[in-house]
Amino acid sequence: MDPMAPVLSVRGLSVRFLLPRGRRVAAVTDARFDVAPGECLALIGESGCGKSVLASALLGLLPGNAQTAGSALLGDLDLLTADERTLARTVRGRLIGLVPQSPAAHLTPVRTVRSQLEETVATLTATRGRAALRAAAEAAAERAAFPADHLDRHPHQLSGGLAQRAATALALVGDAPLLLADEPTTGLDRDLVDRTVDELRRHVDDPRDGRRRALLMITHDLAAAERIADRVAVMYAGRIVELADATVFFGPAGPRHPYSRGLLRALPDRAFTAIPGMPPELGDLPAGCAFAARCDRATDICAGPPPPGTLACHHPHVPEDVRA
Amino acid sequence: MLELRSITAGYARNAPVVRDVSLSVAPGESVGLLGPSGCGKSTLARVAALLHRPDSGTLLLDGEPVRHWRHRAPRARRTAIGVVFQQARLSADPRLPLTDLIAEPLRATGRGGEVPARVAELAPAVGLTPDLLTRRPHEVSDGQLQRACLARALVLRPRLLVCDEMTAMLDASTAAALVAAVEDYRAATGAALLAVGHDRTLLERWCDRTVHWDGLA
Ligand SMILES: Nc1ncnc2c1ncn2[C@@H]1O[C@H](COP(=O)(O)OP(=O)(O)OP(=O)(O)O)[C@@H](O)[C@H]1O
Ligand code: SF4
Ligand SMILES: [Mg+2]
Image 1 (cartoon, protein in one colour):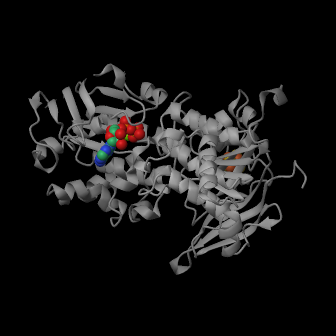
Image 2 (image 1 turned 30 degrees about the vertical axis):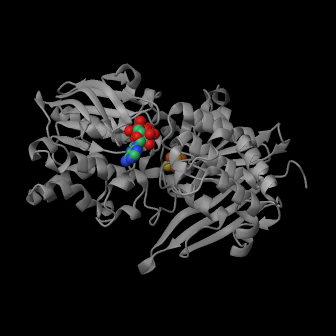
Image 3 (image 1 turned 90 degrees about the vertical axis):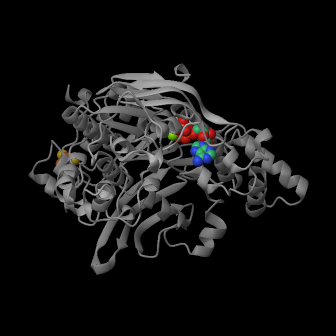
Protein backbone atom coordinates (compact mmCIF):
# COMPACT_ATOMS: atom_id res chain seq x y z
CA MET A 1 0.00 0.00 0.00
CA ASP A 2 1.16 3.53 -0.77
CA PRO A 3 2.53 4.85 2.55
CA MET A 4 1.17 8.32 1.87
CA ALA A 5 -2.27 7.20 0.67
CA PRO A 6 -4.94 8.53 3.01
CA VAL A 7 -5.99 6.20 5.78
CA LEU A 8 -9.54 7.51 5.52
CA SER A 9 -11.05 9.09 2.45
CA VAL A 10 -14.56 10.54 2.76
CA ARG A 11 -16.48 11.68 -0.32
CA GLY A 12 -19.97 13.15 -0.53
CA LEU A 13 -20.97 11.72 2.82
CA SER A 14 -24.53 12.64 3.75
CA VAL A 15 -26.74 11.38 6.55
CA ARG A 16 -30.51 11.94 6.69
CA PHE A 17 -32.76 10.95 9.55
CA LEU A 18 -36.30 10.08 8.58
CA LEU A 19 -38.81 11.19 11.19
CA PRO A 20 -42.54 10.59 11.55
CA ARG A 21 -44.84 12.67 9.35
CA GLY A 22 -42.32 12.74 6.51
CA ARG A 23 -39.88 15.05 8.28
CA ARG A 24 -36.25 14.71 7.25
CA VAL A 25 -33.27 15.95 9.22
CA ALA A 26 -30.14 16.69 7.20
CA ALA A 27 -27.56 15.86 9.88
CA VAL A 28 -24.53 15.64 7.56
CA THR A 29 -24.41 17.01 4.01
CA ASP A 30 -21.81 16.25 1.38
CA ALA A 31 -18.77 15.89 3.64
CA ARG A 32 -15.45 15.47 1.86
CA PHE A 33 -12.08 15.05 3.55
CA ASP A 34 -9.04 12.78 3.86
CA VAL A 35 -6.92 11.88 6.86
CA ALA A 36 -3.35 10.83 6.06
CA PRO A 37 -1.05 8.58 8.08
CA GLY A 38 0.76 10.67 10.68
CA GLU A 39 -1.89 13.38 10.48
CA CYS A 40 -4.35 14.76 13.01
CA LEU A 41 -7.51 16.32 11.63
CA ALA A 42 -9.67 18.21 14.15
CA LEU A 43 -13.37 18.41 13.37
CA ILE A 44 -14.84 21.40 15.20
CA GLY A 45 -18.20 23.13 15.34
CA GLU A 46 -21.02 23.91 17.72
CA SER A 47 -23.01 21.28 19.56
CA GLY A 48 -25.67 19.65 17.45
CA CYS A 49 -23.98 20.51 14.12
CA GLY A 50 -23.53 16.86 13.12
CA LYS A 51 -20.01 15.97 14.28
CA SER A 52 -20.96 12.91 16.29
CA VAL A 53 -23.39 11.72 13.61
CA LEU A 54 -20.49 11.78 11.17
CA ALA A 55 -18.44 9.69 13.61
CA SER A 56 -21.32 7.24 14.08
CA ALA A 57 -21.62 6.89 10.31
CA LEU A 58 -17.93 5.92 10.07
CA LEU A 59 -18.38 3.30 12.78
CA GLY A 60 -21.65 1.94 11.40
CA LEU A 61 -23.44 2.95 14.57
CA LEU A 62 -26.27 5.02 13.11
CA PRO A 63 -29.83 4.24 14.25
CA GLY A 64 -32.23 2.43 11.95
CA ASN A 65 -33.99 5.55 10.66
CA ALA A 66 -30.79 6.95 9.16
CA GLN A 67 -30.01 6.98 5.43
CA THR A 68 -26.49 7.53 4.16
CA ALA A 69 -25.06 8.54 0.79
CA GLY A 70 -21.49 8.90 -0.49
CA SER A 71 -18.49 6.86 0.52
CA ALA A 72 -15.98 6.59 3.34
CA LEU A 73 -13.04 4.47 2.26
CA LEU A 74 -10.74 2.93 4.82
CA GLY A 75 -8.25 1.21 2.54
CA ASP A 76 -10.47 -0.73 0.14
CA LEU A 77 -13.39 -0.99 2.51
CA ASP A 78 -16.35 1.39 2.21
CA LEU A 79 -17.53 1.92 5.77
CA LEU A 80 -20.94 3.15 4.61
CA THR A 81 -21.90 -0.04 2.80
CA ALA A 82 -20.07 -2.60 4.98
CA ASP A 83 -22.39 -5.06 6.72
CA GLU A 84 -22.69 -5.25 10.50
CA ARG A 85 -20.65 -8.49 10.65
CA THR A 86 -17.69 -6.83 8.90
CA LEU A 87 -18.02 -3.72 11.02
CA ALA A 88 -18.10 -5.69 14.25
CA ARG A 89 -15.36 -8.17 13.29
CA THR A 90 -12.87 -6.11 11.36
CA VAL A 91 -13.64 -2.41 11.73
CA ARG A 92 -14.46 -1.42 15.29
CA GLY A 93 -11.35 -1.84 17.43
CA ARG A 94 -9.21 -3.29 14.62
CA LEU A 95 -9.32 -0.70 11.84
CA ILE A 96 -10.74 2.15 13.90
CA GLY A 97 -9.77 2.65 17.54
CA LEU A 98 -12.46 4.65 19.27
CA VAL A 99 -11.57 6.99 22.13
CA PRO A 100 -15.00 7.67 23.59
CA GLN A 101 -16.67 10.87 24.72
CA SER A 102 -17.00 9.86 28.34
CA PRO A 103 -14.31 7.32 29.23
CA ALA A 104 -15.69 6.65 32.69
CA ALA A 105 -19.00 5.56 31.16
CA HIS A 106 -17.25 3.49 28.49
CA LEU A 107 -15.32 1.38 30.97
CA THR A 108 -17.13 -1.50 32.66
CA PRO A 109 -17.63 -0.38 36.28
CA VAL A 110 -17.43 -3.76 38.01
CA ARG A 111 -14.14 -4.89 36.46
CA THR A 112 -10.57 -3.76 36.93
CA VAL A 113 -8.69 -1.96 34.20
CA ARG A 114 -6.37 -4.95 33.91
CA SER A 115 -9.15 -7.43 33.26
CA GLN A 116 -10.75 -5.16 30.66
CA LEU A 117 -7.43 -4.72 28.87
CA GLU A 118 -6.71 -8.46 28.91
CA GLU A 119 -10.14 -9.24 27.53
CA THR A 120 -9.73 -6.70 24.74
CA VAL A 121 -6.30 -8.07 23.88
CA ALA A 122 -7.76 -11.59 23.71
CA THR A 123 -10.62 -10.41 21.48
CA LEU A 124 -8.63 -8.25 19.09
CA THR A 125 -5.25 -9.95 18.81
CA ALA A 126 -3.79 -13.43 18.40
CA THR A 127 -2.22 -13.31 21.88
CA ARG A 128 -3.12 -16.42 23.94
CA GLY A 129 -2.18 -17.75 27.35
CA ARG A 130 -2.40 -16.07 30.76
CA ALA A 131 1.16 -14.82 31.01
CA ALA A 132 1.16 -13.49 27.44
CA LEU A 133 -2.19 -11.69 27.92
CA ARG A 134 -0.95 -10.17 31.11
CA ALA A 135 2.20 -8.89 29.42
CA ALA A 136 0.26 -7.55 26.43
CA ALA A 137 -2.20 -5.74 28.70
CA GLU A 138 0.65 -4.15 30.61
CA ALA A 139 2.32 -3.10 27.37
CA ALA A 140 -0.96 -1.52 26.18
CA ALA A 141 -1.30 0.38 29.46
CA GLU A 142 2.26 1.60 29.15
CA ARG A 143 1.68 2.89 25.61
CA ALA A 144 -1.15 5.09 26.90
CA ALA A 145 0.94 6.16 29.92
CA PHE A 146 -1.49 4.43 32.25
CA PRO A 147 0.42 3.71 35.50
CA ALA A 148 1.01 -0.03 36.08
CA ASP A 149 0.26 0.27 39.80
CA HIS A 150 -3.31 1.39 38.98
CA LEU A 151 -4.13 -1.59 36.74
CA ASP A 152 -5.96 -3.44 39.50
CA ARG A 153 -8.31 -0.53 40.19
CA HIS A 154 -11.92 -0.22 39.17
CA PRO A 155 -12.98 2.71 36.94
CA HIS A 156 -14.66 4.65 39.78
CA GLN A 157 -11.34 4.67 41.63
CA LEU A 158 -9.68 6.62 38.81
CA SER A 159 -9.54 10.36 38.27
CA GLY A 160 -10.94 11.72 35.01
CA GLY A 161 -7.48 11.88 33.48
CA LEU A 162 -6.59 8.28 34.36
CA ALA A 163 -9.97 7.01 33.11
CA GLN A 164 -9.17 8.76 29.83
CA ARG A 165 -5.81 6.99 29.61
CA ALA A 166 -7.45 3.65 30.37
CA ALA A 167 -9.91 4.26 27.52
CA THR A 168 -7.06 5.30 25.24
CA ALA A 169 -5.14 2.13 26.14
CA LEU A 170 -8.21 0.07 25.16
CA ALA A 171 -8.52 2.01 21.89
CA LEU A 172 -4.88 1.25 21.03
CA VAL A 173 -4.98 -2.51 21.67
CA GLY A 174 -6.16 -3.44 18.17
CA ASP A 175 -3.37 -1.34 16.64
CA ALA A 176 -5.88 0.33 14.32
CA PRO A 177 -4.55 2.64 11.57
CA LEU A 178 -7.27 5.20 12.38
CA LEU A 179 -7.99 6.63 15.81
CA LEU A 180 -11.32 8.35 16.23
CA ALA A 181 -11.65 10.50 19.35
CA ASP A 182 -15.06 12.02 20.03
CA GLU A 183 -14.80 14.92 22.50
CA PRO A 184 -11.98 13.22 24.40
CA THR A 185 -11.47 16.11 26.82
CA THR A 186 -14.94 17.24 27.86
CA GLY A 187 -15.03 18.22 31.51
CA LEU A 188 -11.29 17.99 32.06
CA ASP A 189 -9.34 20.93 33.38
CA ARG A 190 -6.76 22.61 31.17
CA ASP A 191 -3.73 20.64 32.42
CA LEU A 192 -5.54 17.36 31.85
CA VAL A 193 -6.77 18.50 28.44
CA ASP A 194 -3.19 19.25 27.43
CA ARG A 195 -1.89 15.94 28.74
CA THR A 196 -4.72 13.97 27.14
CA VAL A 197 -4.42 15.45 23.67
CA ASP A 198 -0.61 15.28 23.79
CA GLU A 199 -0.95 11.57 24.48
CA LEU A 200 -3.32 11.14 21.56
CA ARG A 201 -0.92 13.03 19.36
CA ARG A 202 1.96 10.76 20.34
CA HIS A 203 0.17 7.79 18.81
CA VAL A 204 -0.17 9.57 15.48
CA ASP A 205 3.55 9.43 14.89
CA ASP A 206 4.87 6.99 17.40
CA PRO A 207 8.65 6.57 17.52
CA ARG A 208 8.31 3.69 19.97
CA ASP A 209 6.54 1.38 17.57
CA GLY A 210 7.44 3.17 14.33
CA ARG A 211 3.77 3.37 13.37
CA ARG A 212 2.05 6.31 11.72
CA ARG A 213 -1.63 6.39 12.52
CA ALA A 214 -4.29 8.86 11.47
CA LEU A 215 -6.26 10.71 14.13
CA LEU A 216 -9.67 12.26 13.64
CA MET A 217 -10.46 14.30 16.75
CA ILE A 218 -13.95 15.68 17.20
CA THR A 219 -14.02 18.52 19.69
CA HIS A 220 -15.56 21.83 20.62
CA ASP A 221 -12.40 22.72 22.51
CA LEU A 222 -10.56 25.06 20.16
CA ALA A 223 -7.49 25.22 22.39
CA ALA A 224 -7.18 21.43 22.25
CA ALA A 225 -7.53 21.52 18.46
CA GLU A 226 -4.90 24.23 18.16
CA ARG A 227 -2.53 22.22 20.30
CA ILE A 228 -2.42 19.02 18.25
CA ALA A 229 -4.16 19.37 14.89
CA ASP A 230 -2.40 19.55 11.52
CA ARG A 231 -5.61 20.54 9.78
CA VAL A 232 -8.97 21.81 10.96
CA ALA A 233 -12.38 21.01 9.49
CA VAL A 234 -15.16 23.36 10.59
CA MET A 235 -18.70 22.03 10.51
CA TYR A 236 -21.80 24.18 10.41
CA ALA A 237 -25.33 22.86 10.08
CA GLY A 238 -24.11 19.50 8.81
CA ARG A 239 -21.64 20.83 6.22
CA ILE A 240 -17.88 21.12 6.41
CA VAL A 241 -17.68 24.81 5.57
CA GLU A 242 -13.92 25.22 5.87
CA LEU A 243 -10.95 22.87 5.75
CA ALA A 244 -7.72 24.64 6.58
CA ASP A 245 -4.16 24.24 7.74
CA ALA A 246 -4.13 24.55 11.54
CA THR A 247 -1.25 27.02 11.71
CA VAL A 248 -3.03 29.38 9.31
CA PHE A 249 -6.41 28.85 10.99
CA PHE A 250 -5.17 29.69 14.48
CA GLY A 251 -2.46 32.10 13.33
CA PRO A 252 -2.61 35.83 12.59
CA ALA A 253 -4.32 35.37 9.20
CA GLY A 254 -7.07 33.32 10.79
CA PRO A 255 -9.77 31.31 9.09
CA ARG A 256 -11.58 32.59 6.00
CA HIS A 257 -15.17 31.45 6.48
CA PRO A 258 -17.28 34.00 8.41
CA TYR A 259 -18.62 31.26 10.70
CA SER A 260 -15.12 30.03 11.60
CA ARG A 261 -14.09 33.61 12.32
CA GLY A 262 -17.13 34.11 14.54
CA LEU A 263 -16.34 30.93 16.46
CA LEU A 264 -12.79 32.11 17.21
CA ARG A 265 -14.02 35.60 18.14
CA ALA A 266 -16.27 34.02 20.79
CA LEU A 267 -13.29 32.69 22.78
CA PRO A 268 -12.81 34.30 26.20
CA ASP A 269 -9.23 35.31 25.32
CA ARG A 270 -10.49 37.00 22.14
CA ALA A 271 -13.62 39.19 21.83
CA PHE A 272 -15.85 36.85 23.94
CA THR A 273 -18.87 37.80 21.84
CA ALA A 274 -21.32 35.17 20.66
CA ILE A 275 -22.29 34.83 17.02
CA PRO A 276 -25.72 36.51 16.88
CA GLY A 277 -28.77 34.31 16.37
CA MET A 278 -29.09 30.55 16.59
CA PRO A 279 -28.02 27.68 14.35
CA PRO A 280 -30.72 26.70 11.85
CA GLU A 281 -32.99 23.71 12.14
CA LEU A 282 -31.39 20.71 10.42
CA GLY A 283 -34.90 19.68 9.36
CA ASP A 284 -35.48 22.94 7.55
CA LEU A 285 -32.26 24.13 5.93
CA PRO A 286 -32.27 26.88 3.32
CA ALA A 287 -31.20 26.02 -0.25
CA GLY A 288 -28.32 28.46 -0.04
CA CYS A 289 -25.77 29.12 2.68
CA ALA A 290 -27.14 27.93 6.05
CA PHE A 291 -25.17 30.65 7.85
CA ALA A 292 -26.74 33.53 5.88
CA ALA A 293 -29.26 34.54 8.58
CA ARG A 294 -26.39 35.18 11.02
CA CYS A 295 -23.72 36.46 8.64
CA ASP A 296 -22.71 40.12 8.33
CA ARG A 297 -21.24 39.54 4.86
CA ALA A 298 -24.36 37.95 3.36
CA THR A 299 -25.63 39.23 0.00
CA ASP A 300 -28.28 38.03 -2.45
CA ILE A 301 -26.05 35.43 -4.04
CA CYS A 302 -25.72 33.68 -0.67
CA ALA A 303 -29.25 32.37 -1.27
CA GLY A 304 -27.62 30.08 -3.85
CA PRO A 305 -25.56 27.01 -2.91
CA PRO A 306 -22.05 27.95 -1.70
CA PRO A 307 -19.15 26.93 -3.95
CA PRO A 308 -17.83 23.36 -3.59
CA GLY A 309 -14.29 22.76 -2.34
CA THR A 310 -12.61 23.48 0.97
CA LEU A 311 -14.25 26.85 1.57
CA ALA A 312 -18.05 26.93 1.30
CA CYS A 313 -18.58 30.70 1.11
CA HIS A 314 -19.44 33.26 -1.55
CA HIS A 315 -17.57 36.07 0.23
CA PRO A 316 -14.73 34.57 2.25
CA HIS A 317 -12.28 36.78 4.06
CA VAL A 318 -9.20 37.50 1.99
CA PRO A 319 -5.85 37.14 3.77
CA GLU A 320 -4.09 40.51 4.20
CA ASP A 321 -1.06 39.49 2.15
CA VAL A 322 -3.21 38.69 -0.88
CA ARG A 323 -4.98 42.05 -0.73
CA ALA A 324 -1.75 44.04 -0.28
CA MET B 1 -25.14 38.00 50.26
CA LEU B 2 -23.42 34.63 50.74
CA GLU B 3 -20.78 33.70 53.22
CA LEU B 4 -19.21 30.27 53.63
CA ARG B 5 -17.17 29.91 56.82
CA SER B 6 -14.85 26.93 57.41
CA ILE B 7 -17.01 24.54 55.42
CA THR B 8 -16.11 20.85 55.51
CA ALA B 9 -18.24 18.60 53.33
CA GLY B 10 -18.19 15.31 51.46
CA TYR B 11 -19.90 12.01 50.86
CA ALA B 12 -18.33 9.91 53.61
CA ARG B 13 -17.70 11.17 57.15
CA ASN B 14 -14.08 10.07 57.28
CA ALA B 15 -13.09 11.42 53.86
CA PRO B 16 -14.32 14.97 53.24
CA VAL B 17 -13.67 16.36 49.75
CA VAL B 18 -14.01 19.96 50.97
CA ARG B 19 -11.96 20.83 54.04
CA ASP B 20 -12.28 24.02 56.03
CA VAL B 21 -13.05 26.30 53.10
CA SER B 22 -14.19 29.92 53.44
CA LEU B 23 -15.54 32.16 50.70
CA SER B 24 -17.92 35.09 50.46
CA VAL B 25 -19.92 36.77 47.71
CA ALA B 26 -21.15 40.34 48.29
CA PRO B 27 -24.57 41.48 47.01
CA GLY B 28 -24.34 42.06 43.25
CA GLU B 29 -20.79 40.75 43.10
CA SER B 30 -19.60 38.08 40.69
CA VAL B 31 -16.99 35.69 42.02
CA GLY B 32 -15.20 33.03 39.98
CA LEU B 33 -14.01 29.94 41.84
CA LEU B 34 -11.19 28.26 39.99
CA GLY B 35 -9.93 24.76 40.74
CA PRO B 36 -8.64 21.61 39.03
CA SER B 37 -10.76 18.56 38.22
CA GLY B 38 -11.89 16.61 41.22
CA CYS B 39 -10.82 19.19 43.82
CA GLY B 40 -14.28 19.43 45.39
CA LYS B 41 -15.47 22.74 43.96
CA SER B 42 -18.73 21.23 42.66
CA THR B 43 -19.42 19.92 46.14
CA LEU B 44 -18.85 23.41 47.55
CA ALA B 45 -21.17 24.86 44.89
CA ARG B 46 -23.87 22.41 46.01
CA VAL B 47 -23.42 23.51 49.61
CA ALA B 48 -23.75 27.15 48.56
CA ALA B 49 -26.92 26.33 46.61
CA LEU B 50 -28.40 24.62 49.71
CA LEU B 51 -28.34 21.27 47.92
CA HIS B 52 -25.76 19.53 50.10
CA ARG B 53 -25.51 19.72 53.88
CA PRO B 54 -21.93 20.31 55.05
CA ASP B 55 -20.40 18.20 57.81
CA SER B 56 -19.27 21.32 59.62
CA GLY B 57 -18.90 25.04 59.18
CA THR B 58 -21.39 27.88 58.73
CA LEU B 59 -23.22 29.22 55.72
CA LEU B 60 -24.70 32.71 56.02
CA LEU B 61 -27.30 33.92 53.57
CA ASP B 62 -28.02 37.66 53.90
CA GLY B 63 -26.25 37.46 57.25
CA GLU B 64 -28.53 34.71 58.61
CA PRO B 65 -27.11 31.25 59.29
CA VAL B 66 -28.60 28.44 57.19
CA ARG B 67 -29.86 25.53 59.31
CA HIS B 68 -31.73 23.44 56.76
CA TRP B 69 -30.70 22.09 53.38
CA ARG B 70 -32.45 20.62 50.36
CA HIS B 71 -36.25 20.32 50.63
CA ARG B 72 -36.09 21.24 54.34
CA ALA B 73 -34.72 24.70 53.56
CA PRO B 74 -37.39 27.41 53.88
CA ARG B 75 -38.89 28.25 50.50
CA ALA B 76 -37.86 31.91 50.58
CA ARG B 77 -34.22 30.90 50.93
CA ARG B 78 -34.29 28.16 48.33
CA THR B 79 -35.90 30.44 45.77
CA ALA B 80 -33.33 33.18 46.36
CA ILE B 81 -30.73 30.98 44.67
CA GLY B 82 -30.70 29.71 41.08
CA VAL B 83 -28.36 26.92 40.02
CA VAL B 84 -27.00 25.76 36.64
CA PHE B 85 -24.93 22.59 36.38
CA GLN B 86 -22.41 21.32 33.84
CA GLN B 87 -24.37 18.32 32.61
CA ALA B 88 -27.72 19.68 31.51
CA ARG B 89 -28.84 16.19 30.53
CA LEU B 90 -28.43 14.83 34.02
CA SER B 91 -30.34 17.69 35.61
CA ALA B 92 -33.29 17.88 33.18
CA ASP B 93 -36.38 15.66 33.47
CA PRO B 94 -36.37 13.85 30.09
CA ARG B 95 -40.20 13.76 29.92
CA LEU B 96 -40.75 17.51 30.06
CA PRO B 97 -40.88 19.78 27.02
CA LEU B 98 -38.54 22.73 27.46
CA THR B 99 -41.43 25.10 28.36
CA ASP B 100 -42.40 22.90 31.30
CA LEU B 101 -38.78 22.42 32.27
CA ILE B 102 -38.38 26.18 32.54
CA ALA B 103 -41.74 26.58 34.32
CA GLU B 104 -41.21 23.75 36.83
CA PRO B 105 -39.96 25.93 39.73
CA LEU B 106 -42.92 28.31 39.29
CA ARG B 107 -45.43 25.45 39.43
CA ALA B 108 -43.61 23.86 42.38
CA THR B 109 -44.00 27.09 44.34
CA GLY B 110 -47.70 27.52 43.48
CA ARG B 111 -47.11 30.32 40.98
CA GLY B 112 -48.32 28.45 37.88
CA GLY B 113 -50.30 31.51 36.81
CA GLU B 114 -47.10 33.37 36.01
CA VAL B 115 -45.85 30.67 33.62
CA PRO B 116 -46.93 32.06 30.22
CA ALA B 117 -45.65 35.58 30.85
CA ARG B 118 -42.41 34.48 32.47
CA VAL B 119 -41.54 31.90 29.78
CA ALA B 120 -42.34 34.42 27.04
CA GLU B 121 -39.93 36.83 28.68
CA LEU B 122 -37.10 34.37 29.39
CA ALA B 123 -37.02 32.34 26.17
CA PRO B 124 -35.70 35.17 23.98
CA ALA B 125 -33.37 36.30 26.78
CA VAL B 126 -31.56 32.94 26.69
CA GLY B 127 -31.91 32.58 22.91
CA LEU B 128 -34.63 29.91 22.63
CA THR B 129 -37.04 30.07 19.70
CA PRO B 130 -40.74 29.05 20.08
CA ASP B 131 -40.36 25.80 18.10
CA LEU B 132 -37.68 24.62 20.54
CA LEU B 133 -39.90 25.19 23.57
CA THR B 134 -42.25 22.36 22.62
CA ARG B 135 -39.46 19.79 22.30
CA ARG B 136 -38.23 17.35 24.89
CA PRO B 137 -34.57 17.20 26.03
CA HIS B 138 -33.58 14.35 23.67
CA GLU B 139 -34.83 16.42 20.72
CA VAL B 140 -32.50 19.37 21.34
CA SER B 141 -28.73 19.83 21.39
CA ASP B 142 -26.65 20.22 24.56
CA GLY B 143 -26.39 23.95 23.96
CA GLN B 144 -30.14 24.36 23.52
CA LEU B 145 -30.83 22.31 26.63
CA GLN B 146 -28.37 24.35 28.66
CA ARG B 147 -30.15 27.53 27.52
CA ALA B 148 -33.38 26.07 28.94
CA CYS B 149 -31.62 25.12 32.18
CA LEU B 150 -30.39 28.70 32.54
CA ALA B 151 -33.93 30.00 31.95
CA ARG B 152 -35.20 27.62 34.65
CA ALA B 153 -32.54 28.88 37.06
CA LEU B 154 -33.69 32.47 36.41
CA VAL B 155 -37.45 31.85 36.45
CA LEU B 156 -37.94 32.67 40.16
CA ARG B 157 -35.76 35.80 39.84
CA PRO B 158 -32.98 34.60 42.17
CA ARG B 159 -30.75 37.11 43.95
CA LEU B 160 -27.81 34.71 43.71
CA LEU B 161 -26.91 32.52 40.75
CA VAL B 162 -24.57 29.54 41.16
CA CYS B 163 -23.13 28.29 37.85
CA ASP B 164 -21.07 25.11 38.12
CA GLU B 165 -19.12 24.60 34.87
CA MET B 166 -22.12 25.97 33.00
CA THR B 167 -20.27 26.19 29.70
CA ALA B 168 -17.87 23.22 29.91
CA MET B 169 -19.90 21.11 27.45
CA LEU B 170 -20.52 23.96 25.01
CA ASP B 171 -18.82 25.43 21.96
CA ALA B 172 -17.21 28.87 22.24
CA SER B 173 -20.10 30.81 20.70
CA THR B 174 -22.85 29.16 22.76
CA ALA B 175 -20.71 29.63 25.87
CA ALA B 176 -20.30 33.35 25.17
CA ALA B 177 -24.06 33.66 24.51
CA LEU B 178 -24.98 32.05 27.84
CA VAL B 179 -22.50 34.18 29.78
CA ALA B 180 -24.01 37.26 28.10
CA ALA B 181 -27.51 36.10 29.13
CA VAL B 182 -26.36 35.74 32.74
CA GLU B 183 -24.75 39.18 32.67
CA ASP B 184 -27.88 40.78 31.15
CA TYR B 185 -29.94 39.28 33.96
CA ARG B 186 -27.47 40.52 36.58
CA ALA B 187 -27.37 44.00 35.07
CA ALA B 188 -31.18 44.16 35.18
CA THR B 189 -31.65 42.74 38.69
CA GLY B 190 -28.39 43.28 40.58
CA ALA B 191 -28.13 39.56 41.34
CA ALA B 192 -24.85 38.11 42.60
CA LEU B 193 -22.97 35.26 40.92
CA LEU B 194 -20.77 32.38 42.02
CA ALA B 195 -19.26 30.81 38.90
CA VAL B 196 -17.32 27.60 39.45
CA GLY B 197 -14.97 26.18 36.85
CA HIS B 198 -11.49 25.24 35.74
CA ASP B 199 -11.06 27.66 32.86
CA ARG B 200 -9.02 30.56 34.17
CA THR B 201 -9.33 32.65 31.01
CA LEU B 202 -13.10 32.33 31.07
CA LEU B 203 -13.59 33.09 34.76
CA GLU B 204 -11.21 36.04 34.76
CA ARG B 205 -12.96 37.50 31.75
CA TRP B 206 -16.41 36.88 33.20
CA CYS B 207 -16.19 37.70 36.93
CA ASP B 208 -15.36 40.75 39.08
CA ARG B 209 -12.90 38.65 41.03
CA THR B 210 -11.55 35.13 40.70
CA VAL B 211 -10.29 33.08 43.60
CA HIS B 212 -8.28 29.90 43.41
CA TRP B 213 -9.33 26.80 45.31
CA ASP B 214 -5.87 26.41 46.87
CA GLY B 215 -6.17 29.85 48.47
CA LEU B 216 -9.47 29.14 50.24
CA ALA B 217 -8.63 26.57 52.90
N1 LIG C 1 -22.18 11.44 44.92
C1 LIG C 1 -20.88 11.18 45.17
N2 LIG C 1 -20.53 10.10 45.88
C2 LIG C 1 -19.22 9.83 46.14
N3 LIG C 1 -18.18 10.62 45.74
C3 LIG C 1 -18.47 11.71 45.04
C4 LIG C 1 -19.83 12.06 44.69
N4 LIG C 1 -19.80 13.22 43.96
C5 LIG C 1 -18.50 13.57 43.86
N5 LIG C 1 -17.70 12.69 44.50
C6 LIG C 1 -16.24 12.75 44.63
O1 LIG C 1 -15.88 13.93 45.30
C7 LIG C 1 -14.67 14.50 44.77
C8 LIG C 1 -14.90 15.97 44.41
O2 LIG C 1 -15.98 16.04 43.49
P1 LIG C 1 -16.46 17.38 42.83
O3 LIG C 1 -17.41 16.95 41.77
O4 LIG C 1 -16.93 18.27 43.87
O5 LIG C 1 -15.08 17.94 42.15
P2 LIG C 1 -14.85 19.02 40.98
O6 LIG C 1 -13.79 19.89 41.48
O7 LIG C 1 -16.07 19.68 40.57
O8 LIG C 1 -14.32 18.10 39.75
P3 LIG C 1 -14.58 18.21 38.15
O9 LIG C 1 -13.95 19.48 37.70
O10 LIG C 1 -13.92 16.98 37.62
O11 LIG C 1 -16.07 18.17 37.97
C9 LIG C 1 -14.29 13.64 43.60
O12 LIG C 1 -13.28 12.73 44.01
C10 LIG C 1 -15.56 12.89 43.28
O13 LIG C 1 -15.27 11.63 42.70
S1 SF4 D 1 -21.88 32.32 1.72
FE1 SF4 D 1 -22.60 34.36 2.19
S2 SF4 D 1 -23.91 34.10 3.98
FE2 SF4 D 1 -22.68 32.23 3.80
S3 SF4 D 1 -20.93 32.61 5.07
FE3 SF4 D 1 -20.33 33.27 3.03
S4 SF4 D 1 -20.83 35.43 2.98
FE4 SF4 D 1 -21.88 34.62 4.74
MG1 LIG E 1 -17.17 19.72 38.70
